[in-house]
Length: 439
Length: 157
Image (cartoon, rainbow over all chains, first blue to last red):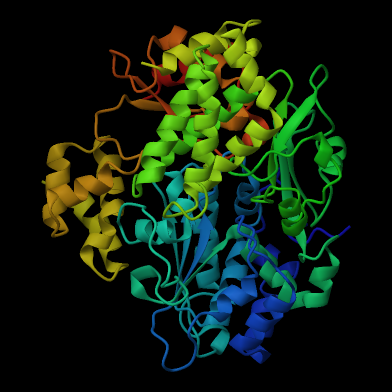
């Protein structure tokens, strides 16, 4: 089984430096493209490979690039940005690529920048990835030194600058347009679309924002072709995917696998099954803002289309497992606490609705829930759903809630009827903890 | 007043952007690195230097959770309270830290050595529960390891 993205990653040693990276074929794709491919040919090749955005939206990457104005009339400088603000709770896949092989990301960004004829690039890195920041700075310097960055790259007429920007927190920065505001030194609130960033993005100029994993696929597509990339996958969506599993499994971790492995294979084989004494109850397949899947979805293929057909989203492909010893209401409360806290406050439904949802759930955990609360929660899943808010934060927050209300409704009812959290009688810690959050 | 070091670092960032105020987040990071936190006075001097109003600078400073608008202790403990750490029992670590340091989320020890803050996801969910102290990441943390971990920072300047 081919693992192009992680083949040269070994966390037990430092990542490949420029020379070592070149020895295993690194920057060959940049040479190939600059020697004999037009920008539009690169766009077309990536579009044909059916590479879909790995940040969670799953949009065809080459198609996204094709919306950027090209030719002499286009505004410059154009920008290309790597979204390395990995902050979706439960997600830890880009860290592996950033710490494991930074030159692969840089090469992917150079190729993508060439495809849209960008002039300036940024890596927007989350603050917590201290080790990655050091490694990326060093790798960018090496790439400049070798002439892969800067003016007249490899003797061509085209040049690209690259900067590392480290953030100062806030989940909102991962939203494409909010990220642009953060890079412009503003509050990270989302922007209205249209205009889309491809036309008017950073500082009002044409801009492409892609996820780290998406960029890392590009050199391999250029080197091996669209059909090869499609052939790596077990489904319609091209390529391999970095999958992760966390929670009470025997071997939590992150693995590069063919796109479209089943949830069963991920949990039973790669994650080693559930820890002894714990039963699988459900899982968020792709981070905090995705709908629960349960045992009935055990054989669903983990690709964008199949997971959507099962009523959820592939999201980031990193799964959080809910076990039978963890209270589903407490689990969802934790998620809603996060989303309420991270709401940027820009639009009313999100700013006001999420704290209300959080308080209802906390009350339920403390044994003060009422049956009407279930209707209130149901109502919020509609009113904070798609189309009613400025960006996808609140609709994303409603995904685990609406599916928990569907699959684990009996557990919500038990909280109300018994006037306590049934999971917290065994240990007093969570109850006291819930109370401490009320101060 | 901004120091020479701060001005130099801010000027470097200003050169990379089309207009001055686009460098405000970098300026806040630079000043916080030097002074530990962002006081009202810092907001005002940054505003004057970047030709912005203090309110505009403050609107940005208060948005980002890692820009500190209140003094913090010498070491900042960021305890992940997100979903994978919830499942794996970060609550026990929170209780443990409260016992060792007698501070809750948002509080600083009287000797100004530690500030404890909740933090949404440190991006190492396969090694939950996790916490960060200053720039050091601790993964798969057990309650009984807390004392040893904290001890390192009691003597560290």
